Every structure is written in C-alpha cells, then in structure tokens.
Image (cartoon, rainbow, N blue to C red; front, side):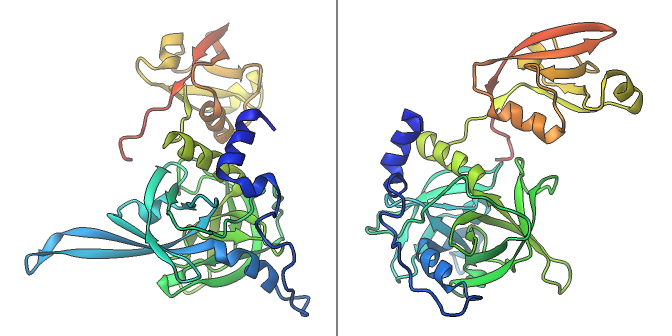
Length: 340
C-alpha cells in the first residue's frame, strides 16, 4: 500500500487499517441456512435514510412551498462521511440524515460528481457504525445480492435478487458507467443504499432502476471499486479530477478494419484549442494505439483519458493519408460540463 493511500485510510477510514476492529466479528446467526439475517444485521446500522427539502419558486399564501425528496446513504467513515447518489441531493436546499438508531442531523455536502452520480455528505454525530469496505470484493454473475435502503421513504427495508450482469454500459444513466445489474427490487427512495452479498460485503451503491409496466424490472449499482476512487477525490479535493484530451472517435468502417485491424478507431471530432488540437490531431485520422496500447472499445478509450494524470504526455499513433504519425498530447483536466 502506498504512503498516500495508507495516510488516507488511516485518517478517514481507520477501521479499514485493522479489519473489523470496530465491527463485531461475531454476529448472531440464524439456524436457517437460507436466512441472510446475519449479513443484514451487520450492514443495516450503516445504511441511513435521507430526506431532502427544496424550496419551490411558486408561492402559496405568500409562503414558498417545500418539495420533499427521499433516498438512502451508506456511512463509510467514523468521521461522519456518507456516500449517496448525486441525483438524491442535487436539488436540495437542506439534507437530513436519519440513522437506524433514531438519531438525525442536517448534513453538509462535501462534494459531488454528477458524471458518476455520486456524492459525499458529512454529519457530526458520534459513534457512527461505519461499514467495512473492501474495494477488491469479488462480484460474479449468479451471486445472491441484497439491497438495503429506504423505499418510498417508509423506513429501512431489504430486498433480494441475484447479480444478473456486471460491467453494464451504454445505459445513458451517467457519463461513466460500469454498473452491476441485479433483479433485486429497487424503488423510489432506495437510491444511494447498499448492495451487499450474503456475507455483508459492500458490492456497490444502488443507483437506478428500470421498470417495465407492473414487472419487477432490473436495477443497477455503482461498484465499490469505482465508487471508492471517486469518494477519495471528493473528500480530498471536493471534486473529481479527470484527464481530458479533447477529441472524440468512433469505430472505423469495414474497409478500414480490414486494412488497419479490428480494433481501430477514427477521429470524428477535435475540440478547438484543446490538447489534441494543439498536438496536431485532425478529424479522419485513424487511431492505431495510445502509448502502444491498442484500444478495444469506446468506453476503454473514454476511461483511459479520464484516468490519465493531468500534465502527463500520451503518445498517440495515427495514420493520416498513408503517413504514420506519433503525436504527443499533454493531458489537461477535464472541463466541468456546463449542465452540472
């Protein structure tokens, strides 16, 4: 573990430096082998209800009217840090956190990332039951999954399903997608709650659901591994710093694939005066590799740029009118989208 990572964990997540030190290692188990009560008892104190209040511009009897929203969150640190979905708190003027032990407090927003639909809140309450987090927890299709949250604002509840798929993308739910898909029931108010396995390990943060008529539908969660990287940046920086190169690309046509290889992309747009533009990249350049790495999908290309360190140099190999070029692009910080 690197020094910076160790310092972060020691400062904000001391319970992770000594696994399960602050979380009981012996939890009363049910005699029923099909019962998951042990996992629920282990995690449910860490899941909170969230109520949000926002003022409506319309006035009734000269008084502004209040819109009330609902959601869930997960306590991730004894210092009071709570992770939830950005869409749960995006329009809130006031955010109230309700613990399972009955305590409640107005939370402050530490940071949010609309592009991944994550936000970090903080409360000053003491003796908080922070969940133990393993960012490397394994998630496999067919695993039983439990969702703990606050459906319809009625109070904490648990639903069950299986992991239907992992790595779900192209859903249009957020800019950076790598969802765990389950068939566990997720309703209004569940967003921001915990997706766990039968051992009580946090698999992800419940984010969105699709429903079709009266059928149960499918639900999605942000994996713990992705969420923790974003959470660390929100706590340290108040925002997520992503790399940006300033061009878009897409798969090349059949003739191009036969000529240059299956995993070949063509530049379709270049941001004026952006890093790629200044390096000399042009529309219709054929992208062969980046730092000698062949890009196998558009999401992979997107993630590579986002994960690149600001100020680092990428060597982009392109073919332009039968001429092989290697362009050096200096990565910039991704501009904040105007919609957020």
